[in-house]
Length: 171
Length: 160
Image 1 (cartoon, rainbow over the protein chains, first blue to last red):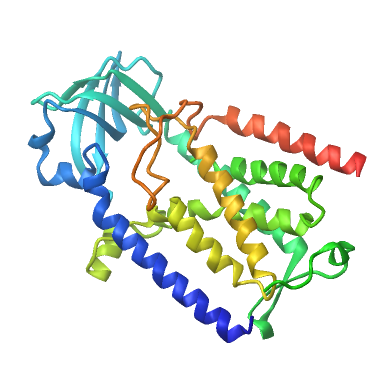
Image 2: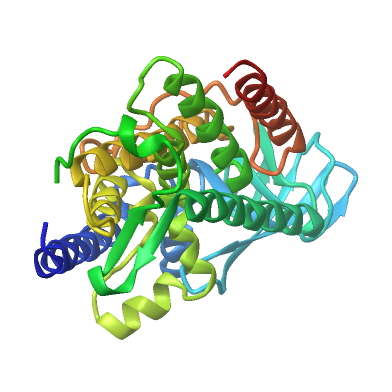
């Protein structure tokens, strides 16, 4: 495929991807069966008395009771919820999922809790390890492929015996 | 999501074992599969710029999480395939397979309501039941995957 054609195909696919992100963003709130942060921001009262799943950042911990903040798309606090019956170990700064019925005074007795990140440190661990994953994948890729700026793309490095075992050009 | 190192190591192990069966699946294609395993987490660009910022810039609803779905990874694999100068169909297939390995592993993680995320979009918004096997910050997941990937690496080095 000529470079100009590849650029055209990539542009078309990127535009389609942007369209997919728009459609997903436009329909997610109504398709997700639980309240999102944005919906809580708009009208929290419509969800009281309902069984919901909420994701929140832990603010305080006291015995089996925690206070969490649910965030909206802008990362602002959309709601504060006091959750009891939390049988898992978690610290302020951690991230949890809570599932249960929301009372009118914005408390909940959790039927089930999942601790996504036990503490702020657990989030940091995940990001550091993920960065190592990105570097490993890119490093392994660069070991076997090289960029050719004049062709606007990557080609296999040719110093190994793999070239003979690859199939003929199918592109 | 599990952490990205887990996904990359899982793709390495899976596709290296597959390469023992398929002659065309050489190390350079295993490398492509490992890149494919990164694709769904491109939604983490949201750590740099939030959906709300993008929405206010574009004037329409927008969610980067669409990239963590089947539809999103199909398009991302297509874009990745044309970044290579040749063998685009093969690259598309391997990138997509790597990305699907990521989505399948994510499909096993814990949700408090017992149903997985909406990764089948845009085919369906159905959330399948999840076995709640792990949470993403659990080091056990990485340890287990690391042992498997290490065993595959040693097997390949010693036997092939």
